[in-house]
Length: 146
Image (cartoon, rainbow, N blue to C red; front, side, top):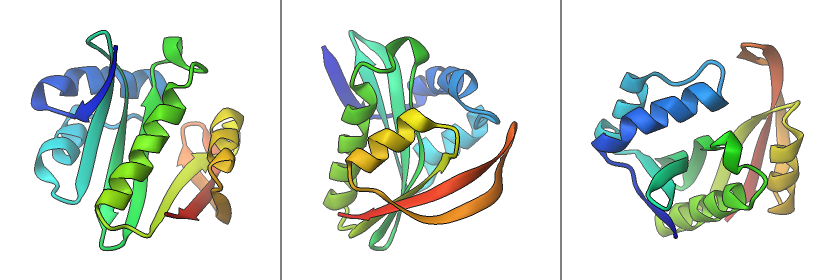
């Protein structure tokens, strides 16, 4: 059974493992702790499948603007619709928090993510040169109205 819920302190080690698997450089455990437990502007939710955390997102709410800081699905579960499920939850949560727009950055080379975001009417707002450092790569700033 699939379940999306608020992240808890006990989830942080699993989120740190996902960060290492999916992102370079990954957020450290202390960063995740800050987002999940200490930052009132952050919403961190996890995607569970049969009790296993297989995905998550970090959403930052700044007045009427939502910024997707992180979203990811464990590699073994990618290309099965879980990223789409998480993105739909992100948009739902942003709307529930009275946001009228959502932005995010994505690597130029992440074709699967770009395709997903474009299918939800995200548009390219800007190119951020050398945004990512390991490996060095540009990012697209994408956005959409909610």
